[in-house]
Length: 510
Image (cartoon, rainbow, N blue to C red; front, side, top):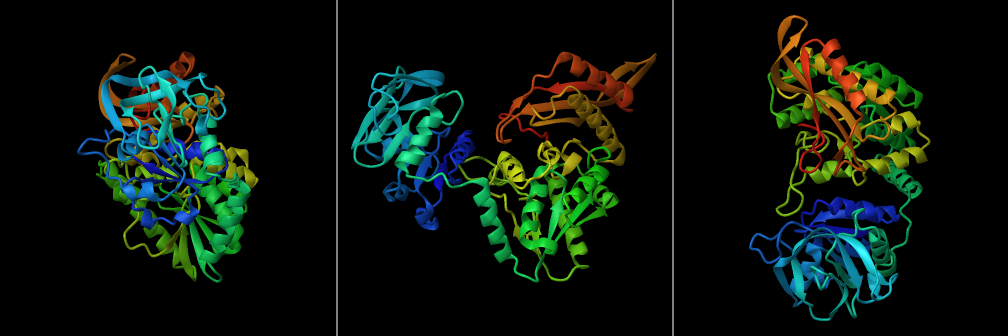
């Protein structure tokens, strides 16, 4: 694999995705880890990510310099380049040479990462740096330059160490994939053998060993892509020893419980419907803090499974569709990506879990899970389903959750998605949903004054949910949606549109 050390860049997960697109496994770890805690025999190359800090600042992310003595092929990106230069005897500068946004670099040496280009050729790139390398570290040569950074790329003349001041992982660097591919294939000598078929084969074998007969496993099915593909994969390893439960929390979309159960039965999974609506809504009564909501829902989920597992003999494992972004966003290390929110699959579990976890997708992004689903011949309707949060509408109802407010949001959300589908936009969007705000405002309906609630519409495009852009929806569509919600949903008199990207906002409101 290629190991990526995270120094806090918003693009770190994108680096991992790019490497995986070459059919090579990659993994992100905090920059604070010690190399002695990693099985380096499995690591073919090391990438040092970018980051917002300055290498020379007193509060710079902690870094174990033992990584520089591992003899691993290494690629430093932005902050990673400055780090290599700083520890290699070079000198850094800051000030007038700052570059943010599109820039152009000139190839100074047709070697290493730049072997596809001749000296003097120019490449469009995406720069994002305040610091820059002013003096080459010992043993290094310059491979590219720019007007704002005379030393925009470097390489060691005798070791497989390379670095770039710009970001090759973003689409704004058109030749970035080729640069990364040169590192992964030619410098780190990785083979493109991490494929969906291999992943499925290895996972089935590992799960069968993890849960030997006659042990049983239960699966938390939501009907979404992650948990459904996970159930189908695990069922290939365990067969009838996998028992799936679909829990109706009362926080699903309108009429979703019935439609989800019908789809799951078609997959020939052993599924039981558990009606726990009153229990979840009762536990959430009066709760307004989003983190508390998530933890309550995670706890009740486990309690429900534990209770139903009592009717089964030999249940030892719980299957979850946890994804890599869930894990990354739930981990906080000084310097690297901060905790954004506790994910129900990660932070909502009780400390004394009675089951061992099976999380086959813990190291995958959602689009990779969809690829696996296609490899498993699953229906397109399931694989194209937009992400839906584990806590359901609980994190889209800001403030207190009541049966009445749930119904209000269900109706508004149903109208929005109905119109989105009618417009043919559903598949192209990462997510589209409605949010019920704890805001009342004055309105006029008919001849009367109203003081009712507000619905916010959210629609975004994304590749993996780690970053997202708000979607520009057609004006006629928005007019229809707004008009229908105000006229058809009792208690709502105002509709607003969320036009925030991630970052700085998150996709979900809570």
